[in-house]
Image (cartoon, rainbow, N blue to C red):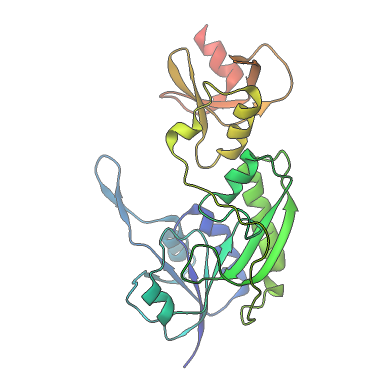
Length: 270
């Protein structure tokens, strides 16, 4: 039987990893999730992974947790919004997850964002063999990078590039090593976590950097929601007063409007 490499992913953060695998692997199959009904018309919408597969003529199928993928040599999982049940793992044991931290630090759903909020200097990614617990499996590869003062989007981009350069060095047939060191966990963030209205300057800046993908961060300004995508460290007249000083937003999205510079937004208020 011909053996294939499989990829499991379902959102836009999966795509750079899938793109690398598409370039590097000829016998690739992709497993994703079925379309969801979105918008006011509840229109059925394919996820970015399925769209990429269609555009690049990649064999793609929907996830079925009762299935045994007999032709799978190994599977790589990245940003797949589905937890594998134990019986699925028993039938499909050669699954490896790409986790965006240096495990066992920052297990869970938001490692990049939590590292920024905690003002970490070093980050990275880990490839580990999936077991029945969350992010606890044997490590087959790790690599680190400097994340000091970076936005989440920049860290994601740096990790994608690192994975692309590392891929040929990753041995998916090795036994792997147990995780050692201090274990920390992350949690899922919700809309209220993105609110910087009552934050200090440092807290606001960290949230803006951490949530530029998941959020963005926002503030109540002129009695309306103002999304803040980025900020400047250069003092100027375009500013918002917080509890302990001034924030100098750079790119914002006003309520009901398109993304624009904060300067343009202020000019529109005059």
